[in-house]
Image (cartoon, rainbow over all chains, first blue to last red; front, side):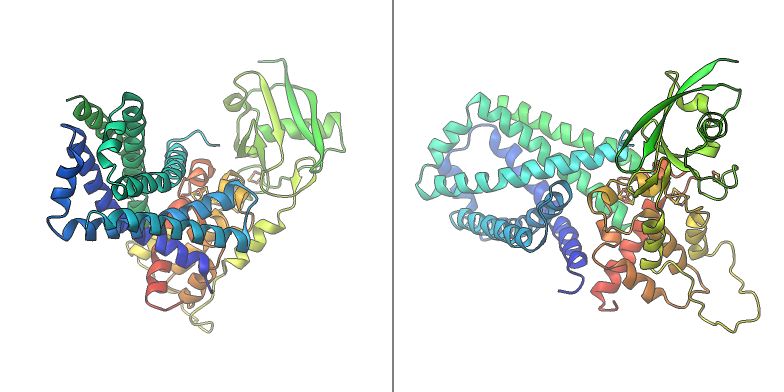
Length: 110
Length: 109
Length: 238
Ligand code: SF4
Ligand code: SF4
Ligand code: FES
């Protein structure tokens, strides 16, 4: 693809823009849930009440998978001698793995 | 050559990013498995152990650091240049530590 | 102040070693003075580069105690805190001999980044009027005084990790042209810096700005290029 690096860079920054508010939300959820030891029933009871939670966390998973895979590809390319097609394929696989694992986890709060 | 604040901010961003990227699959896998096998309560019990809590606190700080540092980078790259971005490094680090402190305090409460 | 100073100088090409010399100290001595003394008095076979000796030509850059610097304007007393000076060739460039590096890759990247003026009207007779308060003029002003010394290029870790990266000086030059009202090929400049080793490879860690001897901030110029390149790419103008 022409200008692959530029488009990956744009996807990286675009996903970062999406992630920033979601991470803020996630941190708030963590801080909220950590005290008082929520039980599984309580957590699922709240998330299953509406579609907002699974939709939000679904978006979170998609953005994080894109962001992490592109970021890791840059780091590996700069800090190791692994480059080229095989690295691209491996990092694509890494992103896909994150996506599947994440969507599987999100499915259960829906 | 690497002894200046912007470089240290870069290193912190990169190292926290690597740690988060490696932790993420484990996090999602464990979470998915726990919910799938209805073992979430057991998982939450496990997660209540002090060592696990400490590790979580570190991850929370790394996540906050990566996010606040990332906001600074986005501001540098997407907004008109400001020499204030040097000060933002301190603010990003302070905010990340505050989140970590909040996590520790709330989990003790 | 009299006495001598132990000066270690890189000898050889990529494979080489440091050789120590005792050089008499003088007030207000520069690192270039030390190297020149060694070449004139102690070992005429020492290879190094300089021309103006007053910080204009950009040819005297070397690595002094691990930091890239213009040696003609670097006072010994500023860098020899522990009574020791170690002079090596600039990083990120092939070494020809001793302190002289092959500068071609650095200047070639200036061309690769399309860092040359493309007149919008080659037949223009009158001098173009650009008001000093014009915002683009101000942006260009901020980057225009580059002396091409490659200190930033040597300080940049991305150049070290990704050798094809265009580097701070070439991109800074492109930024001044994009902001030059007389230049007729803004899109051409942006296309050049949007290639795979272009501006987006920069991590904004600003070692370039920390080390530029004339106080330029290539990281700022590169951030400006990133914005224009993102916009142009999203609009399909590249
Ligand atoms: S800010 Fe960019 S150009 Fe400057 S040293 Fe860092 S990576 Fe290199
Ligand atoms: S930007 Fe500064 S350090 Fe880089 S080549 Fe120009 S004058 Fe030298
Ligand atoms: S000799 Fe010309 S800049 Fe140092």
